[in-house]
Image 1 (cartoon, one colour):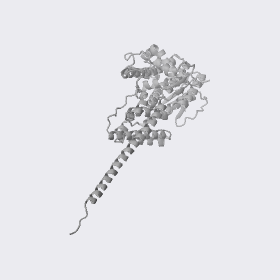
Image 2 (cartoon, one colour):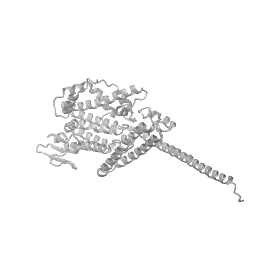
Image 3 (tube, helix red, strand yellow):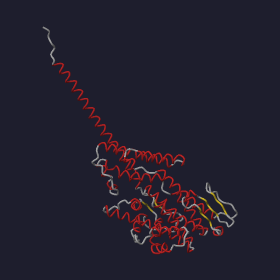
Image 4 (cartoon, helix red, strand yellow):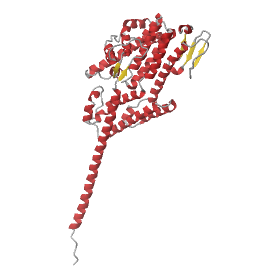
Length: 439
């Protein structure tokens, strides 16, 4: 009779192997979960630190100083003065220009029409208020850009309910729009009256104000500032054409200082990054981080992702990482020459728009268009300066270097600057008596 080995040992060995495999699997799952949790914590920490830094840049106070050639200074902080004066706005919607009147006033302000009675009446009624807004650019001290942010970006006004804060923000935006147009009308009216020196001082205040409201407003502020210049150029050029020589020199000095002190595009991009990421991603951060960001979250309407699934959170995380990469690449490209910058910015926008991640495509920005607008703005500023240089040029036929632009002088000593890349204002002329007035 053959003896059979007991099967108990085999069963025990098999059970041991199964339990070992199960324990290994559990350990792998636990370690993977721990790693995922650690990765998420590290990612959250990294995103929070990055967002906090961008917020600090966006809300960083700037040392606001008047231009050296602005006449007089105003006591008080720029933001407080601007806030109090904007809130005195009293032009009702029905009192402002309709579409046809606005077009007529644009032609009148450029000297292309005599039909300016409606524009002059508005300026006479509200010009003093508008001038009080523009003159805030003469205030010295720290500025955090909070009032300009509310007016340009419709951010809620702190201390107000959401509805009331939004209405006040919109009212300030409308007031700022009216003040800038009334300033254009004021310059034109001063030119018509022959008060060219005062008109040029108003132009300096207006351009300084344009600079003052950019910090804190991101690329929107940069674009709105760019949009103000084409309206200001015609009456300001007319004022510079006829102003006394000393006033022209003060104007040239102010233009040089403005060109050197405009807020950087990198800061504006960081400001947008802070605002967009607060809205899009902040609710995905741990509660402790959201508490730390509460003062800033109260100023925007963030998306609510607290019920997001794991896969949705992964998509959010990918979008946030992609957004950070886009910002860094855009800042680097803005510092390149146009031949490198523009194709790179176009690819950056195209990649974002083509993304299957809706948040990445939703936050896509036309970087190349922004670059083109800023370049046109710089060209307009250069044209403003050059036309005054021409005005003060000797009358012996010698003309200053116009770079890529074309200069001609006719037998009446009228100088024409053909600057098509300076925007809509393509031809600038200097009057026949420019030589005499510059002496």
